[in-house]
Length: 160
Image 1 (cartoon, rainbow, N blue to C red):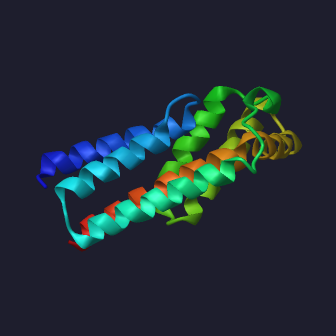
Image 2: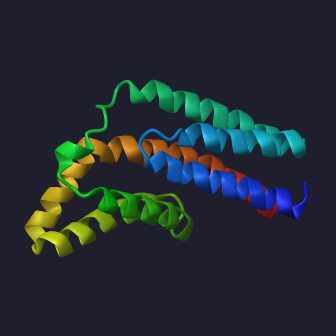
């Protein structure tokens, strides 16, 4: 696979990760399509393993979504910009502090933005609690189910 194709696959994966944060955009399907594209052009066993793992993980995520409450962003009372910023921080945090950084980035950004907006520690904590109850679990599950295949893809690329 050429460097330009790898850059294009990475761009599509990034688009899918951002798509997970935007309601109505099929971010998981976009990430899966990028992994499929890569696996079809780079026919190594590792590529096919990442594709199979991605498929199983995203199917499991779809099954678990039925057990979680629906996203209720309006009920949380937190501005949409804060949630988007938190999602971007989770994506960055996932790669800065592998795996745990995603949760730390999401929760920390919601707390920091809400503390600045509302002006107190207690209000920031209350906002984090309401966001995590309303949307946090669902968004983090979807985001992690997309971040793990992207991380595996990156790991295979670095290894080869």
